[in-house]
Amino acid sequence: VGSVFEFQARLLGIGGLLPDELSRTQKNSDGYLRRAWDLWWRDRDQFSDCLLPRAAWRFHGLRPANHPQRRLALAAPWLAGGDLVQRLERWCAADVPTKQFPALLRKLLEVESDEFWSWHWTFKSLRMPKPQPLLGDARVTDLAVNVILPWLGARAMAGGNEMLCRRIEQVYFAWPAAEDNSVLKLARLRLLGAGKGRALRTAATQQGLLQIVRDFCEHSNALCEQCQFPELVRGWNTAGSSPT
Image 1 (cartoon, rainbow, N blue to C red):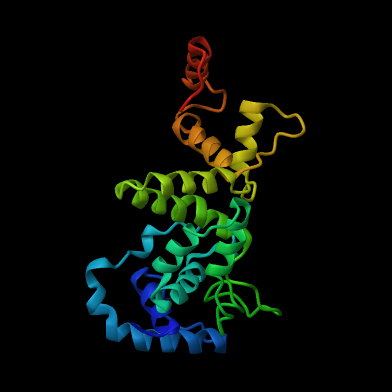
Image 2 (tube, rainbow, N blue to C red):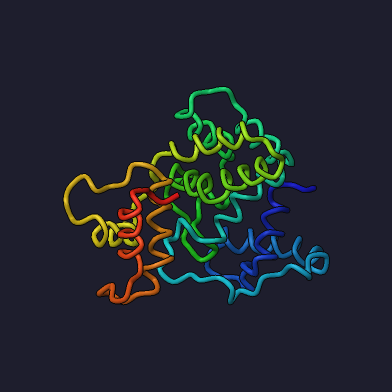
């Protein structure tokens, strides 16, 4: 239980993402950090068994908008509300057309403007001229296909709710594609060729291609030597069936 700011301080503290020193040049950042440390000093011993070392994070090549500090700040209002799980359950069971689920999830996850994080990417970044939303459509899609729908599907499966499982599958496979990235572009070039119209239309298709990259491309060299994926595809064609 606590305010949004208290949850922000706890999440950033547990994540090892509270800077140890003030910037001495940015009054807004230093004021927020002082307040966060005042709370975190009080709570740190309580969470000593789940602290993450700062070395666990990888920041190389990370866009400022995707920095973990800002992402944890976004999660704080969800925790402070205390009913996120119940709201996700109601969203999942909504009797609406499948295509409406992304917009409904965006509305469910939207948070109010934050006095600090709506204006800063990180603790070290300068204050932005205009406030930026903490959550965009791309992040909603990432959360849906990587976390929320798989989690809800696993719960439905564990509870033996076949109807709900089918509903979640329908929503998952109909979800619009997420943002394109360099990994997807390279995989499409290697596997599908460079022709027009090769962009993937659903998030599920993107996830499938990324899984191929992880299972095969990351274990081969740039020339695809000794890659087992072509042989696997030939096996499907020989058997006259598609992969499950």
